Amino acid sequence: MTPPGFDIRVDDVSGPAVLALLQEHLQSVVLYSPPESVHALNVEELRAPDVTFFSAWQGAGLMGCGALKQLDAEHGEIKSMRTRSAQLRRGVAAALLEHILAVAHERGYTRVSLETGSMEAFSPARALYARFGFQDCGPFADYVEDPNSIFMTRTVDVLR
Image (tube, rainbow, N blue to C red; front, side):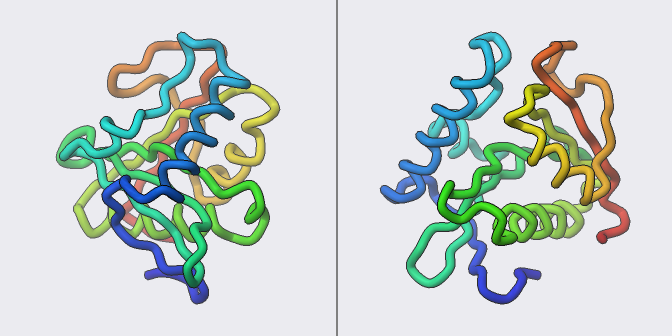
C-alpha cells in the first residue's frame, strides 16, 4: 500500500516533529486565508475518534502528514495534508494521498471529499488532487459556499 521509501503510519499526534509540522501547516493556512475561511483542524480535533491521522517518514525523518475524517459510514474527508517544506516535490503528498484513499477503500467509503483554498498558494494542492481524480463539487458536510474555498470529491470504488 505504501510506495517504497516511505513509512506511512497511524500517528497519535504527539511527537515534537509532528506538532511542529502541524504548527507550520496552521501558520501557512492563516497566512493565505481569512479567519472565517480557515478549516484546518487543531491538534485536539485531529485526535478525535472520527479522525485517523497519518505521518509519513523516511528513515527517522518526518516527511509529511494527512488525515482521514469519517463524515458518515460511506463518506470521508481528507484533512491536514502537509509536506515538510524541505521535502516538496519528492512524492510525499502523492504517497500520503494514495495511502489515505486505500484506507478509505478498505473502510468501505464510496466517496472522499476535501476543502482547500482557492488562492494561488493552494494551486499545487489542487493540481495533486485533480491528478488523483478529484473533481470540483459544492460544499459538503458543514461547509458553506465560500469564495476562499474549493471543494473537491471523488469516488473510491476504483483506485488509481
